[in-house]
Image 1 (cartoon, rainbow, N blue to C red):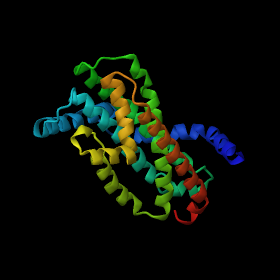
Image 2 (image 1 turned 30 degrees about the vertical axis):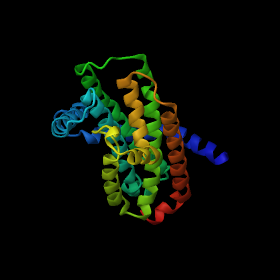
Image 3 (image 1 turned 90 degrees about the horizontal axis):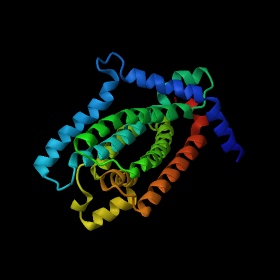
Image 4 (image 1 turned 90 degrees about the vertical axis):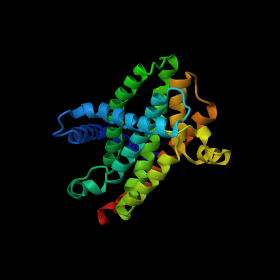
Length: 262
């Protein structure tokens, strides 16, 4: 209990540093870019357009309002992969600073995941444009979207913390994770309806893929205009808590050894 209180106090004490790190990462991302922050809206729109042309004409999935269906899955999955990939380098990439001054090591991972969350909020502008052009009806159920985003953020933070500490001792984790996220993308119904899969595969995805539940919750709120199924919400919340707890535990357990390997 005392350790938890101490970590929370440390987070509060270094909140300004986390804020500055987030701002720095966002500015660096768009430095010397002619369109700057507009790319946060343009990029998901362009990717969605390419995927729409490919999958709606070549594979012809029978999905109502396919552009909105597609951009929801694409945007949420892109956030998760960006946040966790950035987190992998969050400790090793700041080794020079960690060797000179004392800074809680988790603030670097936290800032990377939070910076990706800010980028996600920019990308929501592209999502909104698609919703308007495809005539998605706006409903009160959309007020529950922040609850889905909170689940996804905590899940990504927990996974990011675990990957960050693992990368300190095992640098090959970054290459292995790139392969895993590629497989993960195809195992998540981003551009195809889950009904296309055999029943056994659907049950497996439901059981082991948290991203399926976050994407499904979001699509249900927006496209079906109703509350998601309770079991999907409970799964998403449980996955967020489990991954966050595991990530914090692994990071706290090994952080004192980081200085020997960075």
